Length: 256
Image (cartoon, rainbow, N blue to C red; front, side):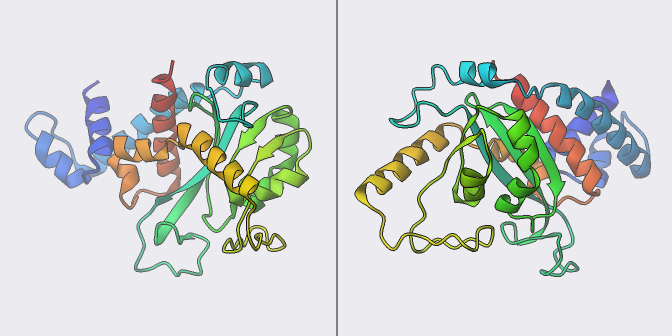
C-alpha cells in the first residue's frame, strides 16, 4: 500500500524520481531504479482498473445521459461529444518538427488521444496514444467502419476538424460549425470556408459552441490532476498510455 501511495504521489506531483526518493528515504529506502520499476507496476494495475470504468453503452444509454442536459435550440438531439488532445513528451531539442512525434499544439514531441464522451462528460471510448500528425479528419476516415457499426444512431457534437464525418459516416449525425473564410484545414483540403456566414449560420455556430462548452474534453482536468501528464513525459509511450488510462478511470468514477 505504501508503494501505491508513493507512486501516485510521484505522478500527481510531477516530481522526478530522485526528488521523490529524497522525500521518502527515511521510511522507504530503495534505489531510484527500484522506485521507477515499482511505479510502472502500479500504473499497470491501476490502468487495468481504469479501463473497466469506460463503458461504450448504446443509443439508449447515451440518450439517458443527455436527457436533462437542456441543450441549446436545434441541438436537443445531441448525445455524444468527440475531441482530441496532445500530451507532451520529452525530446524537444532532439526531435525534428518533421517527425511524426512532433505536435504543433504542444510545440514538442507528444502523443495524441481521442475521446468519445457522453453528455455527462464520461469518456466512453478512448483512442491513443498515436501520432499528433494524424489529423482528426484522417482519424475518422480510418475509424469509419467502427463508427458506423458501434455508434449507429448517435448524434455527435464536434469542431470543424471532424467535418469529414458529417457527409461520409452513415448512421451517425454530426453537428459541426460552419467554417468561415479564415478556416483552413489540412484534414479536409477540399473543404473551403464560406466567404461570409449568414446570420443563421452564425447563430448555429454560437449555439453549438455553448453546447460543446457544457461538456468540455476532460483532459485539461486530468493534466491538473496528474502533473506528470502536464509536463514533458520521459518514461516512454506505453507508460504515458497507462497513466492516461488511470486518469480516465478516476475521472469517470467521479461522475455519477
